[in-house]
Structures are given as C-alpha cells and as structure tokens.
Image (tube, rainbow, N blue to C red; front, side):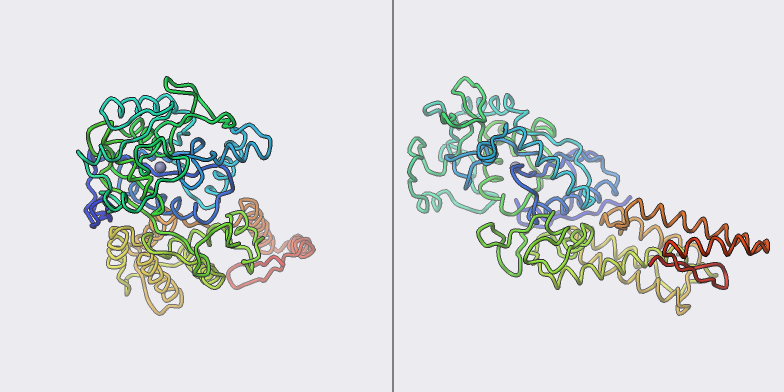
Amino acid sequence: MDKNLIIYNSLTRKKEKFEPIKSPYVGLYVCGPTVYGDAHLGHARPAITFDLLYRYLKHLDYKVRYVRNITDVGHLENDADDGEDKIAKKARLEQLEPMEVVEYFTHRYHENMEALNVLRPNIEPKASGHIIEQQLMAEKIIEHGFAYEVNGSIYFDVEKYNEKHDYGKLSGRKLEDLQSNTRQLEGQDEKKNPFDFALWKKAAPEHIMRWPSKWSEGFPGWHLECSTMSTKYLGEQFDIHGGGMDLLFPHHECEIAQSTAANGKESVKYWMHNNMITINGQKMGKSLGNFITLEELFSGNHKLLEKPYSPMTVRFFILQAHYRSTVDFSNEALQAAEKGLERLLKAGKILQQLIAEKESTVNIDELKANCYQSINDDLNSPILIAHLFEAVRFIYLIKEGKEKINAKDLEQLKNLYQTFVYDILGLQEEQSDNSEFTSDLIDMILTLRLEAKKNKDFSTADKIRDELTKKGITIKDTKDGFEWEQN
Ligand code: ZN
C-alpha cells in the first residue's frame, strides 16, 4: 500500500509528509472527554475526526496504537487552578460517589460513540487510575528544577522553563505578552506567576476526590494526566497527538512543557487539531440555550431541532467539512446531509446489482486515484465525498444503460465503495439488525411462493400472498420475480 499521507502539523504550521518515528508502528494520542455530563456536538467532532485518521492509518497497513483518555479527576472550572472539580461538584449535588458519576457518563459516551460508528481506541486510560504515575512525573519535573512546592501544592515554573526552552511554541504566544496580559487573580497568590499551572493541588477540606502524596492530600492537575498517560502507553516520543483547537492553549502547550521538562525532549512529532462547531452561526454554550447533546440530536428533543437526525446523518454532516474548518449546524444543513447520505448509500445497493459487460466507458482508475489524492491531502473528506458522488453518478448511468462497465472495473468500483464509503468514512446503513432480519425472511418466503407457482401449486402461492397481505406486505409480481413493500 502506497503511504502518501500528508498532514497539517500545528507545531510547524505546515503540511508535512507523515513519516512515523518507527514505521509501521504509529502512536496516536487524543484528548478524550471529561465525564460529568452527556456527550454533545462538541464531543462528536474530535471523535469523528480522529476516527477517520485512525481508520485511514489502518487502511495504509500501519500498526496503530490509539490511546484516548477519560478525564475523571482534576478538571477544574474555567481551567483555573482553584475551584471545584466538575465531577466532584456533580457528585456532591446529586449525592453520588464521584466514580458513580464517572462510570455513568463514560458508559453513555461509549453508547453515543458506537451509534456514530466511532471505533474504540486500543487503550482508554482514566486519570484516576494513574495517580502514582502523575506524582512520579511531577517529582521528575521538580528534580529538573522546573516546578516548586507551596503549601502542599506543586506548580510548574513557566518562567524558569522558558529560560531554557520555548514556552508558547505551539500556540505562538510569547511569555512577555502573557506577563503583561495576566493580572494577579485573587486566591492565586501562592503561585510565583499567574501563568504557572498546578501539577499537584492540595485538596480543600470539602474536596472529595483526593489522594495521598508526599506533599499533601490532593489531586493532580489536568494537563499532567495527558503527559503521563501518553508517555506510559506510547513512550517518551510518539507520532501524533490530537484534540480540539480549544485545547491548543493552555492544555497542549502545558503538555509540551511538562514532557520536555520531565524527559528533556519534545514528545510529539505531529500535533493535529480539529476546528469547532457553531450552531446557527453562534458559539455553543449552556448559557446561550443552544447546547445540544447527542441524545437530543438523535431523538429530535430540543427546541432548536425541527426533527431527529440519525447518528449517521450527524457523522456524514461532520465529514462533509474539512476537519480544520468550522462547521455550522443548522436544520437546513443537516437535512441536506441526510438526503446526500441516503443517495450515497442507495447507490451502494444498486452497485451490487449492476451487470458487467465486455467493455467499460467509465474511468474507474482515475476515480480511485482522485479518492486517494483527496484523503492523502490532510484528510480532505469533503473533496473525497465529492469524488464518491462521481461514483454515484456512474452507478446510475450504468444502471440506465447510458454507460458500460466491464467485470474488472465493476470489481474495482465495488472495492472502492467498500474502502472509502464504509471502511474509511465509516458510513453504514442505519436499518436495525432486526428489520434487516425481517426483510431477509420476507424475501425467503416470497422465493418459496415463486417456487410453488412454478410447480403450479397455486393454492399455496395464494395462501402465502394472503397471509403477507394481512401483515401489511404488498406484493407485486414482476417479469423475473417479485417486489414487495411494507406499509
Ligand atoms: Zn489532554
């Protein structure tokens, strides 16, 4: 398999040929959800973006180890070092054990991802299961002189780090600008500088998620979990780190600083960031009333939604935009995606029934080359989809007898559809297993009826027709068999 993938690296701000550190092995780490509420549209985008990447890397025969974490501790409000962990807050308000909150929403997240046909990562580590590793990494950073202790809390010394390394290399921010822009906030006075961030935080008496450490009973800082777990499962240097653009600063900037401070070297070769989702042109936010969970989207149960949208419609809609562009959700756009997806999948069924001829009047080699070219160009899914609609056009023209296809090309076109539509874009028919089973059964019964007719056993044939009619199945006898419809 030709490996010609080019990806945009947020670190160098350039498109680069993807060359794994130790081909064919690829280490991929993606920042996962904080599990204190239902997954919403904002969760669907990185999940689908990096699912596309994961599927394509596997298609290219790379051996991918995909790690996506679950944040279940230390994720503080407004990303500040003070305040309450969102999971702990939910647990306190609903009188639950924090791990009950975590398990409940992790389970629901998995259900949503499965509906969207997002493949599971190979490893899904939880921050709460890696407290010791986080302490050890904090200790290493202290030993190397890039962190300090105050009142049982450990802070990363950004200024000190910046003397030796480049803090801000990912986000393009300069420390001098941060220094002049940040004010000393109340309650943050134990830090040397307001932009220093916590590696370990001493727990306030009311804080319920806490672990013992040599510094204090407390909890790890959010940025530290991703540095720790990526290092543990992918090594000190690995290939790709992904996440939403909203995580670029400070989360990923801090991750770079932590790993470099602990291990003395850059840990990630390619940083990839997906852009954000807006709703009717507005930023999504709880206070704006336009916050739509995936559950609500699938059921249509939200005042902004005209109807329910199936998980595959949502997946197709997200893939219709390039991952580095913004996506605006609107009813019109979703309904257009729904129609487009239906056309694409229906053509896939017609393709299976096409009959090969001696010659071809369509160019499948060119179509295939175009498909690869678009996906290789930084996962350009909208262009890929445009080429697949060219395949749809061919399929209808061949069906109508206006174009011809030979056996070799037909096989190739079928492979192309399987590879790009189902395997790489991850699109699938949404018919439930149950209705597929029912439809197979009806086909089988009607085939038996056809045989009865051939054997001139008309009483059996009529009986089958009458019984199915009673069940709401309309049968139409055709020249070469039958057609049926469920009312
Ligand atoms: Zn992260």
